[in-house]
Image 1 (cartoon, rainbow, N blue to C red):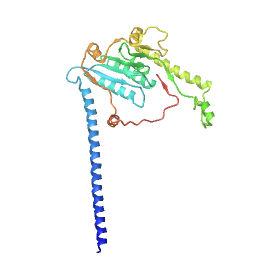
Image 2 (image 1 turned 45 degrees about the horizontal axis):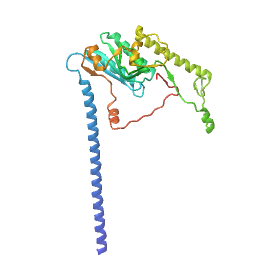
Image 3 (image 1 turned 135 degrees about the horizontal axis):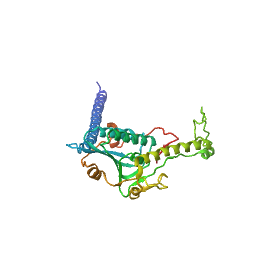
Image 4 (image 1 turned 30 degrees about the vertical axis):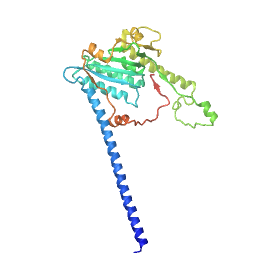
Length: 309
């Protein structure tokens, strides 16, 4: 074998050896990063689990306790507010150690359907277990759909600066007719049924139908508040106008019953200072994804989106 061929062979062997070393290093780094991610996810999962267990463990050691359920954020189907609230209420009422239920509320409202479902569930459970009172404690906001739910409680407690009320209904949207014409956009919509595409384009007949729907939902809302609050409500022309009040104004109007926090109501009203959190959490994967900053949002919302806020 000539010197040239020998040199080429040695070079190829060195290149092959270097390539194998690099591949091994690459695999090692991949394994390292995968293990690191598994450790991080495991730590996050353990943290989520331990926090949930710590919250549930409070008050479990002997005697009765006050069940606490959080109502936080907008009431929507996307975050399954209705489903979680109903499940939490059911668990709290079935627990033989529950002496009272506190809904820790901080919500601007949301779906009238979901709010009505939770309202009905509270009233149904109270009929089955009249010995378990339900109280709502408002931290910052309890408006519209949140107040719809709160009206089913035995009493509502607020801070003097809490925002309460907004007993009204709205349905909003945008009109692009003029802009579409200027841009030369032609919507080619075909329907079977004269009211199938209600409001597109808008016309007096459909506007009247839409307004009637809002009025009907508003009437349901008003009836629910009147049934729940009863003679405590004072006559005020703004009561059902969608107006909001601070807590210190809501009490004399009968929209709230007094000042209080979760701790003070559990201690002084329920007479069971120990609390157990019955709030229904997201599933494991959703909680982990949220903790590491990953969240997927999407879906299609109806053009006729009716809300209580």
